[in-house]
Structures are given as C-alpha cells and as structure tokens.
Length: 232
Image (tube, rainbow, N blue to C red; front, side):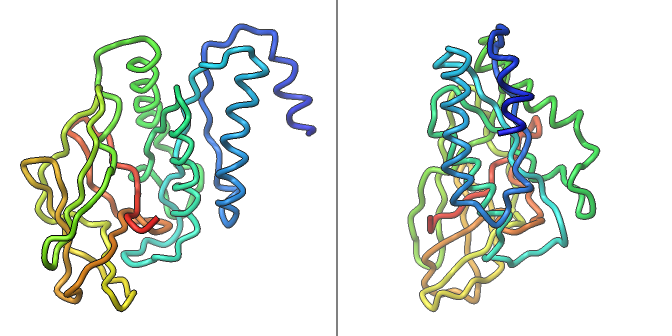
C-alpha cells in the first residue's frame, strides 16, 4: 500500500509506452502466491493507465547461490516458473537471465547484456523491428525407448538453437520417481534428446531446475531457453 500510494499512483496520468519489471527474489518460497499476484498486478496497472494492451516486459530471476547439478526441490526454480506463467497474458515478454547471475550477489553486474535482451523484446514486439528477441520455447515431449525427445515452439522473431552434443542443466526421472543428472543433445530439427544410463523408463525431464544451474541451451545471438519442466 505505501509503495503503491507513493510510487505508482502519482504516475497514472503520465503517458507511458510500456513497463519493464525486474523483481522476484524476495518472493522465493511463495511461488504459488507470486503467480497469482504478479498476473493481477499486470492487469491492474493496465487498468490504471487505461491501456489494456500496454506492453509489460519482465526479467526472470538469475541464477544464484551454490551451483548444483541435481536440485529438483529448488524454490528458485519454482519462482522462475511462476514468472514465466505470466506469458499467458497478451503483450508480455520475458528476458531470460539464467546465465548472467552471480552465486554470491543477488544483484549481478551483467546489466548491460540484460538490457540488450530486454530491448530486443521491445524493439521486436512493440516497435515492429525485425530482430531476434527470443529463444525457442518448450512445447511438449514424447518418449522414445530410453530417451525423452523435447519439442519447442519457434515464434516469429525466434532464432534456432545452437547445436550442442553435451548440454548441461538437464535432469531426468524414471518410474521409481528418482532424479538423475542427464545427458542431452540438440538435433538438426531443433529438438533436444535427453537420457541417462541410470534410467530405463523415463517419465519426466527438467531443465535449469536449480537455484544456480549451468545452462547453455541458447541461440547464436545469446538468447537463452527459459528453465522448464515436463512434469508440471
């Protein structure tokens, strides 16, 4: 209430083209609440500024704390997912920040690159410039033997993935419900194939699912795939 009265309400009569939002670390451990409140905030600000289609572009939480290859219970990952859920609203965009963090500083110094990624979203989506602004977006999967094949959407303004044959950041779950660090590679068709010698019957995959994962799934201009899970 105090922040709103002092910092938002005085601005509602100013003409504003759009919003850039950078916040979320204080809401870790409250991802379900954040999912609801964040989308409500977007609706409310559009109502206040009398712009129902006002662009709202936001930054997903960066990688932070001790690096981990296997952390399926990460609260930071859940908060990132709650942020990404806001993309269901029209005229929203998310700058993925999963590679720019600092394990000891919640305010990493890599703001210039983050600004580049945000500006690419605005230039493409708001100002109709023909520049790449997003990496492929996870869509669905199918199981092929001992592998899970991940498929991605490539909306207009999307670049293809860089081809890699030893992708970090993936974990895979078998029918025993145990998670294992996975092996992953891209294909010429833009899919990602994930497996583990420890998993005979795979049922789920998660990517970037840790407080501070190592993620390299990206495009040639350095736009990163957002963390995701198939078992949502």
